[in-house]
Image (cartoon, rainbow, N blue to C red; front, side):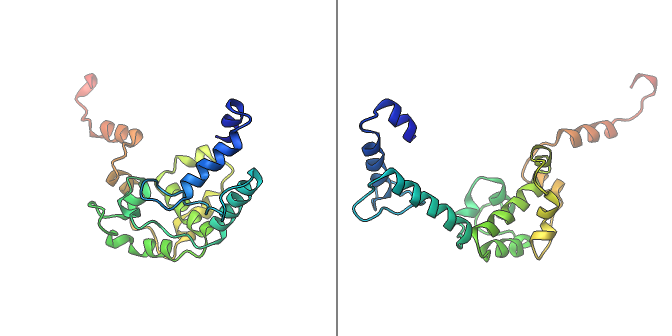
Amino acid sequence: MWSALESEWPDAADRLMFDYLDYRTEESDRVRKLYMIERPEGGFQSKQQVKDLFNAAYEESLTGKRHLPDTFLTFDDDMSRLLATDDGRGVRTEYVPVYMELLKADTGMDTDRMMASLVSYVHPELQDMYARIDFEKLEPAEIFESPVPETTEEIRSRLGYVDSFTEGVDYITGLSDKGPHL
């Protein structure tokens, strides 16, 4: 975004970005506050200051305790739907141990590792796309103290994924042999 501003308004890009960041970090009912960085006293003053603040926030996100949003279970994403009851009001009983481990993760890296474990369990097709990742180390049995209570297939079915290979096998095995003119 900064580069685009610089190409359009080279003399005003920094001031425009500082004003935007000041606006996004102010306490206000009219704007959703940017959560990654806090506004320094006196506002943003330099590009380097902004970079340093984002770098510090990134480091803190990895090494500090990360809290799941209060509304996490209501999100319309795979991991929220995996853990939440159908109405999104709570955690599925069988997933309480997994959810509790997510909540007690010591660092952002621990939280990320747990989420990556669940995502790779629900989406084994990702293994082909990310050959450099050691998916064996992301097995839920390696990451969580308690096993995931459903198989990948059961989860995918519950979440409404269409698995064309499985559907094809089910279709073919469901056919009956009616002689030479199948």
